[in-house]
Length: 562
Image 1: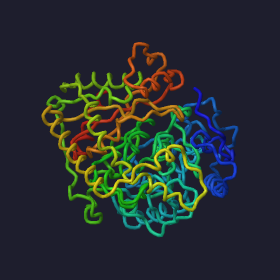
Image 2 (image 1 turned 90 degrees about the vertical axis):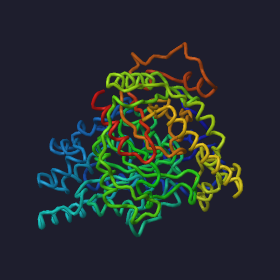
Image 3 (image 1 turned 90 degrees about the horizontal axis):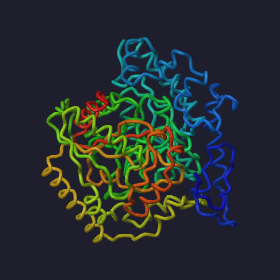
Image 4 (image 1 turned 120 degrees about the horizontal axis):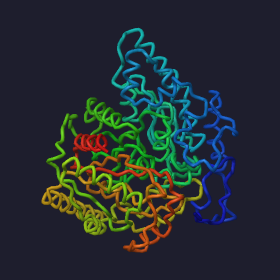
C-alpha cells in the first residue's frame, strides 16, 4: 500500500523507527532544527538503558522487515530463560500469588519483564522511558520486607507495572511527546502512580504516545514511530499506543493508559487485548498530564490495559478499595461491588455502523461471531440505530476543541519542533467565548438525557460496537470514525475484548458494498486483505454509566463462551 508522502522532514535516520516524513507538512528550508539533539539523545538513552543490562540484541538476531508479526518474538529471541518465559506469560493475579508464596521474588519478576520489555522495544519502539535500576532497587526492598515480616505491603506487592508517558513518576520525565519538554523531570509521583506504588507496584518503564496525545498513529519526533505487534505494517493505535504494544509482547503484566476519545480502546483493540474506559469520577485521573489544561467539555479518564481480563478486575478493585475519593476531589465515593449478570435476561444492542465508516470485512466478521455467541447464550439481540444518535451529537462536537486549538498551540511555544499535520489542522479554529461554551455544554447535557431515554425506552442492557472500522489501520491511512469518542461524550464505561484476527482467505473485499460517504468509500477502496493479514479484531462492550463491574462481568461471560 502506498503511504502518503511529503517533502522530507530532516530527521536522523538512525533506525527504522524515526518519525516518518508523511506525518508532517513540508518543512520550511530556512527553519532551525534545534530539536534534533533531543531526538538523538532520547533514542540513545533508551537503547543505552537496555544495553547496560546486556539485553540489546545483535542486529542479525532481530527479525527482518519482512517479519510482520512479532508477538511471540520474546520467547524466540533466546534472551529469556524458560522460567522467565513462564513468568511473563503469567497474568498479574498469578504473579502476585507466586510472590506472596515466595516461589518467585519480585526482583526476578521485574527482571523477566525488563527483558521482555527490552525485546518489545527493539522490534516495535514502544518504550519512552526506561528506569530498570530504580525498579530493581524497589523490588529488592519489597523482597526484603516480605522475607523479614512475612507480609506484603499491599495488594500489588512486587508487581511490575508500566505507565503511559504522560503519568507523573518521581525522577522521570513527562513530555507528552514534545522535544522541548524532555527535561520536565518530576519531583514527586502524581496521585495515581503514588497510590499504585503504595499498593506495592514496581514501576520500571513508561510507554510511547504521539505528539500531544493526538493521533491514532503513535508518532512523535522525540520517541519516533511505534508499530503494531501483530503486523508491523499497521498502526499501534493512539494515544496509548506504546502501552498496548508492550502488553501484546508480554513486556508488562498490567499497564495504565488514559482515554479522552478512544486512547485506551483503539490501541488495545488494534493489539488484541482488554482496555477499559471507565466513567469519569470512578477512578483517579490526577497525576497524568492532559494535552490541554482546564478542558471541561470532554474529560479524560485513566484505565487498565492488559492481555488478561482478571488483571482488569484486579486494578479496578484495588483502586476502589483504596478509596480514591478521599484523595481526588473528582472521584465519587462508590466502592467496588461484586455483581452477577444473567445473560438470558439481557437485551443487547448491536451497532453495525456509526454512519461515518462502515466496519471493514474482518470487523464485520467479528461482530457476526459475537452476535452468534450471544444468541447461543440466550440473550435477546437487537440492532441499534447508532448513526441517528451520532448525527444528533455532532451538533455539539465543538466541545472537543472549544479553544480553537490554542491550548495545543501553547504547548509548542519556545520550540522549533515541526507540528504534525493533525495538530496543524486543529489549530486556528473557533475560540468559543464563555456564552458559546455554556450553550455547547447545555446542548451536551440535553443530548446525554436524550440518549439515556432512548436506551431506557428500548430496554437495552448493554451495547456491542466495533472499536473502529479498521481491524488496525495501515500507517497514515486511518479514517476518523465515531465508534469510540461517542462514549466519552455520554460518559458510559466501555471495555474492549479480543475476538479474532484478520484472515485474507475469509475477509475478502466486498464489491457489493455501498459507500455511505466519501470517507467510507476511501476506507473500502483502500482495504487490502493481504496487507492487514493477521491484524487483531476487537470489539467493545458498553454499559450504563458508572457500572464498570457489570461491564467487566458481561465481557467475562462472552469470552468464556466464544
